[in-house]
Image (cartoon, rainbow, N blue to C red):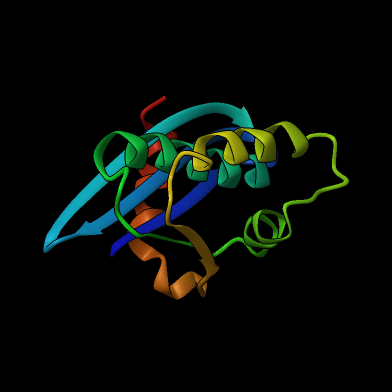
Length: 129
């Protein structure tokens, strides 16, 4: 099983944003920081999941993917496969599209204190801009 920790962060809301992804796979650890431009914090959280799905499609396409996020909004939206928010709908659609080719994709909420690596990577991405 591949553990994928995602976090999005923004400096201001909206403001310069970044996505952090921390992956644990077979004893190896992979880290990614992606500057995202100016977004809200919630948008950055969705984009972090999208970026992680892109990485997993390339590197771990037939593995069991256990995503973890400290954003209840993102986890609830993906689990329910529904949002009324017009800003989040295209992001949910991207997540649907990117996860559809992955046979074993799960996401669960974790507390912020358990997501420190991804948080640091997201903050690093903000400073890369």
